[in-house]
Image 1 (cartoon, rainbow, N blue to C red):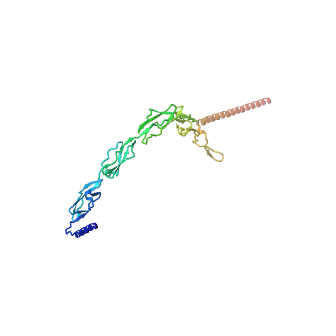
Image 2: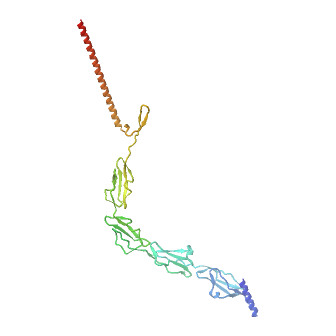
Image 3: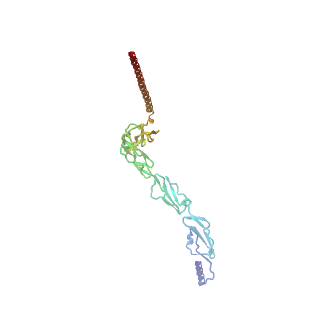
Length: 352
């Protein structure tokens, strides 16, 4: 408003100074909305006479969204400007062979003026240049379309005492695999097959060919139930069981590993004798004492029967001896009585 009053004052002063009796109304240079400027032919003007037109246009990177860019000066003021500007769309930058674009910001805004498209190659591929970004500018996407090429690996490393199944190549592409085999008498430790990975190296590490053997294990009072008698090489497996009367201490199965048998061979330990199931009661003269003794007659029924039979036979023999003695004594007494009677008779006859 200050600027308008200043121009108006200058106009009136000029009219009075130059003795011009009629002065035409004027508008000062108009200002537009967001993201727009005056046309090149109007931007150089400082004022516009009443009835004159001024034209606005969108700045680079923006396009007309709605309304009209022309406004008219009426008297000393401008009519309402209806033009609105919005970001210019760049569209999709196109397909990226063996890759894709990541847009910032995300969504629809990622295809408008000011957005960025970053090229990302698929797994196993890499960019051929260090420039991976394209920008949406006033004229569209800048730069060139990036290129993704497959990752390559050099020939795989050699393995001592082993070889590749197929003849080696100078270069391998991502995903190509090779397989190793060991010479006779050697055991392959690790992965037999490795592949060219996304970092340009074979993964996992190549295997080793080792001369692995385990000594024949000794399990006292045990027997081998599976696994053979040897020789025992890497990953050979044995199973054991204990003889009757022994129990196993440790796992029954062992495996020949790089460092030897794993786990260690088991032990067979003797079983403890079973305790007496029935206690034996002893009766001393003064007190009664009950004790359980290992190896009592209850543990051996056959011994008890033998003792009983022996006792019966012994008793019968004793009775027979006693009967014989009594019979002998009885006969002897009878003989003595007869002899005495005979003597008395003879005496009586003599006296007669």
